[in-house]
Image (cartoon, rainbow, N blue to C red):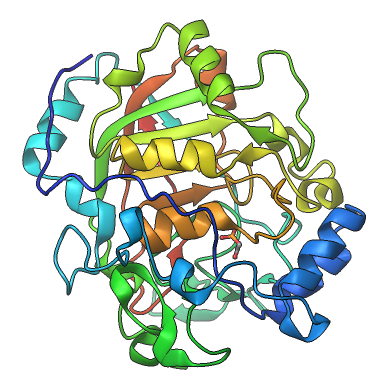
Length: 367
Ligand code: UVW
């Protein structure tokens, strides 16, 4: 739809190293134990924890490097940057995206937040309005009001936008927070605080108004957990949908519909047990296209478990940690697909909660 090329920074080649650091994480181990995906997942859970006596997947030196053996930091947007690929959203980019609005039709592409929704690991969502109305009556007009109390991992449940403080890699020695690196090389030592992240919080993400491309890779296929969406699937979807790869411009969004979202609130156990999704092959293609964000109708966007049983969520690290590319999970594309709308304007601003690891919210697509 547009031939605009909007590159505010130097082109950064796609990383070449395949490996990711491993870290101990009780919640994720619990998830993998709970996920009834058999020996593959159990092996991955084992590989994630040094006490199982397995060697680290890759050397520390490998883990510290991005493209061509160089560290993944400093970012193309400067050594202090905390906004990552949201920096692509310039006034020029917004004006170009606006050209895609032809009908004025608005689609909600996020889910309703409710207590029965599927959640990762032991995450919780509890909304309460005890003994309502909460207050009043006030004044001669007898006004009453209701307030809710919410207890949840607010940035990491339901439709969730992963921020740059969500995922890092343990480099150096196990537990050394000076060598737990996040986007732009920021360390756990620098950013972690019991009252919210001191850097890379959701409030640092610039609002999105950008062109988006939805790739429906289902093509009549019922995908299973652990099945990887490959470049061949991406290219087939582009062809089926009469879209061109070179129409994906820097700062655009690319989303994937796998069909897994059909399980939402219908079979939460299966939905949570793993998922189909992209792996490192497609992730590196996305990095090469210099997108601002990706997302899917699944809870991680990436294939779980990864076909390489040694790796845990390597796409999260490739995109968020190494390249500052955001990930919007548990999206809902049914209405767009029904109308065969594969290209639209994606609009979303994170709820600016200081120090949050991600954001809930209500993304919309406009055609
Ligand atoms: C992880 O923390 C991996 O989960 P999510 O998919 O929610 O980002």
